[in-house]
Image (cartoon, rainbow, N blue to C red; front, top):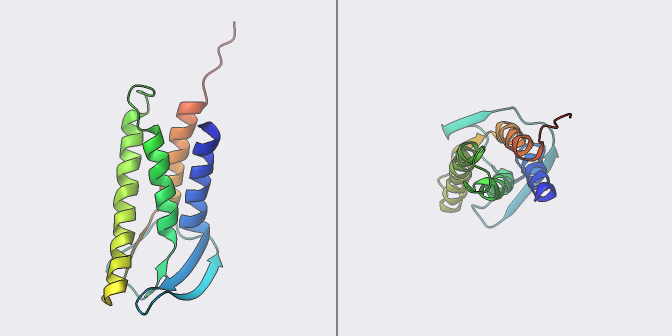
Length: 140
């Protein structure tokens, strides 16, 4: 689980913040381009923005959701349960926001709304990961 958790965090970071595929679904799948760059730590456009295209960030958010579900176990990890639950909830909200953007683009009403907080989710997930898997060593 340790390797899987780290892989999910890295996949979430890569697809939500570093490797971005730009496309539209209004007239079928219309690929524009891909970029490899660092997106801002947080970027939010609630209703309208000049960026009238969809991105592949939802793939990263799905990886974060899977990571969150893996670590949301109150019996096995009671010390990180609340943090993992909060992480999973935030990931679901952000993924839902991106999913509604996809639906709006399919209906032809997309106006550029987006919610990109991949860096923040990655850092919170990394904190959960280190809290669960890095144990303190006691010298005797």
